[in-house]
Length: 225
Image (cartoon, rainbow, N blue to C red; front, side, top):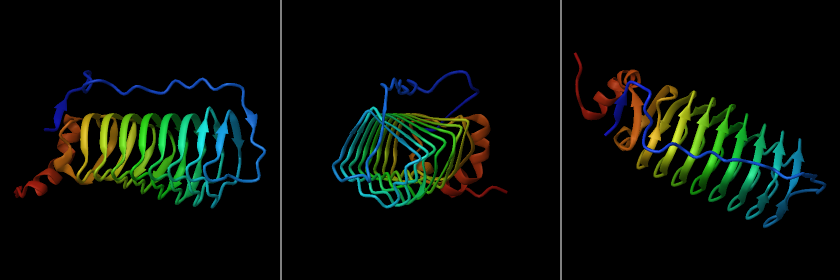
């Protein structure tokens, strides 16, 4: 069941955040990304990666700052121990990718495809992401902090130790999702379009419960007069 709380206590075990300690980085001097490429200890500064194909690539101990990623293909990519700052673009394909020990700061993204992806020890801090597709993804130790998520799709996803901290969650879809130790108390507003019946394993505040009451009543077929 969805548990209400007056604050103070945590839901289960809190999310573990990444602790990035990047080594000295070398500037990336390539002409473009390559499928199955191996990028280690590099800094990508203000790179235009629009439409490039890096499916299956590995980014390890890297920093990507101010990069344009419109339509960039990163399917099956592995992004490890890496800082992503100021990402901007529409239609970036990270489907079935692995993100581990990653900090994503101030993104401006739309229609990002992360369906079937694995996210572990990831922080999304600041920025705005519209229509984030996380269907069938696995999220463990993930924090959404001070960001705006518009119509994110968690359909069929598995969320464990996921926190929303000072985060706007608008029109979220949790259809078929499985939640464990998910803390929604820091989401304001908290707007759930679909999947209210899948919120077992989440914790919300009493004020949020009152805000969701009309939607819950409608989902249960209760008429309020």
